[in-house]
Image (tube, rainbow, N blue to C red; front, side, top):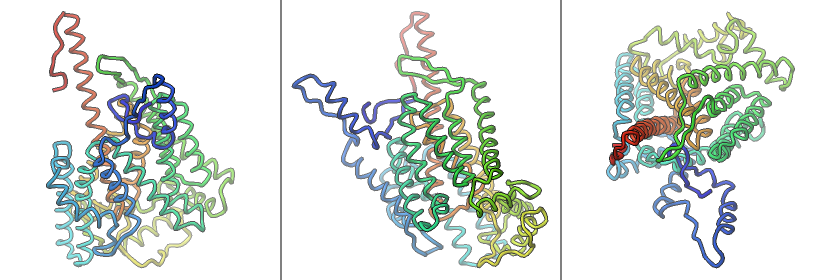
Amino acid sequence: MRTGSRLPGGYSIVGSWFFTATMETMAIAVAKPIGQRIKPKPLWPSREAFYTDLGLFILVISGLYSINIVGALPGCEVILLPMLPVLLVAQGRRAFNRHHLWFFVLVTAWLVGTLIADAYHDIGLFNREKGVSRVIFFALDFMALAILINNKTRRIVVFALSYAAYLVISSFAFSRDFLLQWKFGFSQGSAILAMLASSYFFARRRYGICFLISLTWAGLNLHYGFRSQLGIHFVAAVLTLPFLVRERKTRSGRIVQQGKLGKFVTIVLVLAAAYAANASIKYAAKLGLFDESTQAKFEGQESGDYGVLVGGRPETLVAIQAIRDSPLIGHGSFAEGAKYLQMKQDIQYEHGYSDTDTPEGIGYTTIPTHSHLTLAWVEGGILGGICWIYILVLVIRAVLQLSSLRPGMAPLYAYSLTSFLWDILYSPFGSVNRIWAAYYILLSYFILKSSETKALQVRYERVMQMNARHGLRPARRALS
């Protein structure tokens, strides 16, 4: 296969960087006539494209370093923000198009909500600057990445490779404890590389190998007791399997379709996969397959009245209560939350997750959220909550489109977006997470835009068939 050859749905596969270079050379050597020299197509169409991809790779991995300006400013933003005016002047239309309109409207609303909450609660200048900057930098990261990535599959993959390198290198900070190293970077970084390899086989419809790769990484996460990644791999594997998919060849290529029944089956199996992941780790804990500290953690999370949902993330109930206390205005940037820290400990104590009602001694007392969605709502009020609810729905729509769109990079996309769904609900937002979130949102828009293109293609094919039956000429403006 040539690097950059066309795949189902009009996508390009670039995962061949890892192991197809030799295969390409061999294929060219065998296929060319004797005495005739065939020049293979280069991976990059131009020198400018190569340097843009290299710059994107360096940009992302520079997030390993940070400087303290307004809080911790990661290196990727230190490099990116001075470049942004030039990018906007040169190619600003890539960022400001109709597909991104609601994102900018709602992020602006989140910013306004944060400013109102800060003024209402008289938040200190330092915390106010940090809270407002977090929203502004998030929007600026989105603009810059929209221009640099430009809906190109190759650059989506370059970003993913750089992100994988960032995760693996950052995990070395925990080199004395491999369980922590696995949890804080190595698992996710190696999974991205594995999903790129899986995409190579997926493009060739070797779905069994793809499922085996996902199952292997799920097994590794089960072995090391990484519950969230276990569930993510289970769900992502289900999203890429061909359930009730119909393929047909047309004049413009191969079209893959999945009916409403197929989508319903996919949703049911996704829920079953999430349940199976949780049941697997509970069963492994009962068998005593983990070390003493991991075993004690799981037993403590399962022992309470509400099971692992609250035992693993007690901040969820506290954040919900903080939202109920001030649903419209919110509490402001990095709001004082001593009473909510006590509430968190009380919940754990009253429902059997802790044997004491005294909160742990920590150096800060902000309201605990541990979620993109609840953090935005707690600090910026309902406008922040609406912004992240929109993003949550956007990503879910993109994930569900994967089962019917079936691009060549489906395993990578499914894993990435499923991970982001977890982050929206259960991971903190800030620092380098801003640029990762911007990337995942752009990936969601890219998938949904591709779905629109496929729908137009299907409509065109139907018109072509009707014209052929009636002896009419095909329309020239097929997809206009």
